[in-house]
Length: 273
Image (cartoon, rainbow, N blue to C red):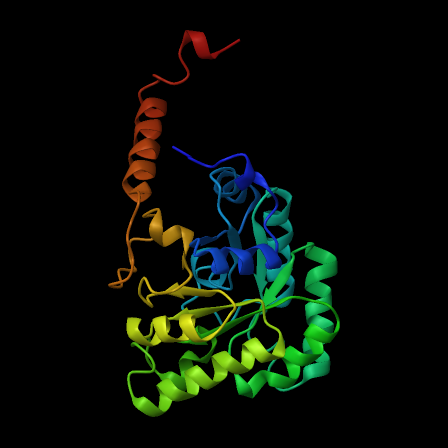
């Protein structure tokens, strides 16, 4: 049951997230990809909803996040925005839309904002994409960073194992986090790194650090909706806590429906005109 106060019903903005960090109030984040689920998540009191490129996996059935297109991300974000009143809606920029050409990055970010009405974009990477971040921010578009395990670079890493365990990679992550803050990002996701490292970053920077598989020293947490609701049973990393078992619930309901139709139990006399 929701315990939100009247004050909590205020619209969440990028500035409010930073205020939450300053007060020590943890930030709850979750992904969503469609109107109906976004509406339910928002009504529950979520602070931030990420229209993640994980839609490539859980909505389109791809093995990685790489195949999803800009048009598809705009479609999902536009659907989510229609169901949200309170949460800040952030849209992932998909692979290939911001790496390498900062002018294209700006053009693509503008498309997301104008066509989906999302309130911010998220990009993966640090110093390597500095120019793209700067251009997007100069246009007045809020940017959320993403460091650590960056799924769009899976072919470079070759594995989804924990990142930044070695000192050199850890120090680069810290340096990139400070860079993202200095450039003007309002927050950043840190994925699948040692908890002590993520906690260090959260202490050293003034913007919110949203963790996924990065321990409880972060300023907030995010999970993929399909994972935490138990819709996706094929993904069971150590950091995932399942809050429901919708796979079995849905399967049971559908099986019962099939039986009722086959046995002419549905519809009954009260369910027909």
